[in-house]
Length: 439
Image (cartoon, rainbow, N blue to C red; front, top):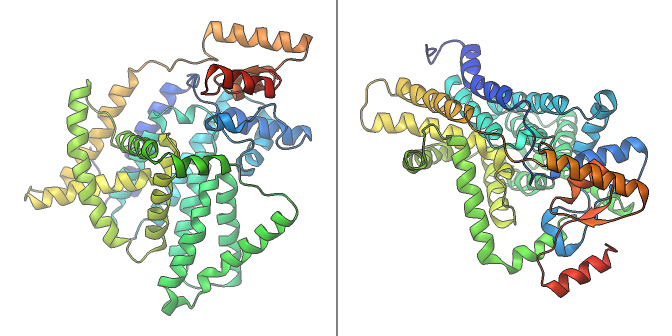
């Protein structure tokens, strides 16, 4: 039974988030995909903090020639969150899964607060339900990552700015802490700086520059951190690639964006062709919904920040859909809003009920199709993979060794043996890199 549009908010949230929770239960004992490695570096940073070692002393051998594997160090926000969790519960995968569930539910709550008040609760719930389901279906929530927590902090900042009615010193301090935490979780959080600067300009008549308060706090904190040598840009090698490989950049951006949208829209049908047709029609609906949302958010900080975040991703060398997770609720809401607008345009009876039914149907169909999927191929879930890791750990305990591996951070975390990624070079260039790293 579908709750009435003006009915119980709790009923709508339960219906919208139940598919996400069901798919999470289905995936609970799955091992992560063999290609995932960021989580190992976050855990390694947390272990370094707990052991009292230097933050970057994690055994990962970084080289600019293999920059695509990951930077030498990640921002400390998420490792600082993981450290007490690991100290209390160890590295239990179930604990990490629960942590991600909590983050996603908090994400749902703050998105609901940040969406304009005039948006009905059923649209909010379906938008977040589609976003949460897409995040889980991607496989990224099988491991501890900074992205879910970053989504919470990013959208909490949007909600706080747009709901601020008096820019008091206490409010400015709160926003400075939340925004600073978002940047400490993930480097793309820096988009809040130009977004808030622009918001201060567009609201000058109302606030006389008061929204720039957090910029002053962040500037002072950043200057102090630079003076103490606590801050560096871990992505400087990626900037050169962005500026020199534009043709490849557009291909990566297009693939990441379209597959991110498809994750939100789900795969409710069996077979590729029905889903391809559905995605084609659904993207037209999303574009119609985006036009409506752009008008609603035209004077809001959320509109500025979300647009800025999207542009930043389009210009950066990223190729994973999880970088788009902060935008998933926007895609979900655009889909739901576009469904209702389309129903009204073609004069269907009860357009709201039609949009509700289609939205819930997509979630149910995607859950049905996702339920039968097989676990991803995993290094930790494969007998031969575990035997290989055990051999590396035993050999490393007998004599010092270093190695090159496709997923170096995972092998280092599991064995304690320093490792670097495999470079995309000529034979001579590859050997030179191995020699430089003493492998």
